[in-house]
Structures are given as structure tokens and as C-alpha cells.
Length: 105
Image (cartoon, rainbow, N blue to C red):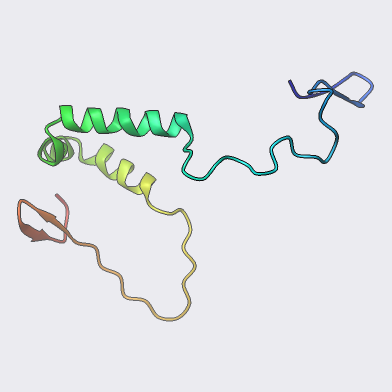
């Protein structure tokens, strides 16, 4: 249920008739600790897949075989915008099999 626009251009409210305009039906909101069930299900599915891929070792093997896709996925996880003021020196590094790395896989 929601708002639709009729051919006259005026809005027609198809929502719950017991709700008044400007009044929230649940002013307390979602209870503390209650998570979005969709997000929870997706996280569980990703964790399941991670375990089926032999964990970190399996992901590393996949990343070596699919470098382009791996880097796309990594960059999708990074923030899209970062505000920085002043001078900045940035370096990236990671650990693989107990060895420090700072270049392509």
C-alpha cells in the first residue's frame, strides 16, 4: 500500500486508513538489537559460502585465479568518498600465508 498518482496529477493515499498524516505508527522504531532479517540471512549465506570455499585459503586461491573480479569486489567494499584535508601519504599492505605483501597478488 502506498501513494499513487492519478491521471489528474493529484495524489491518492492507499495506505492504512487508521494512520494519520505525520504520525508514525511505531514511534519507538525497531527495538534495540533487532536486526534486519534480510541482512542477517545474506550474512549467513555469505558465511556458509565462505566456509564451503575452505575459508581464507579458498578465497585466496580464487583471488589468484580471478584477480580482476577480486579487485572489483574489494573496491566495492571500500567507501566511495573520503574527505581529506592536508597532505596525505597512503600505502596498502596485506598478509598472505604469514608473509607481508604490498603489491599485486
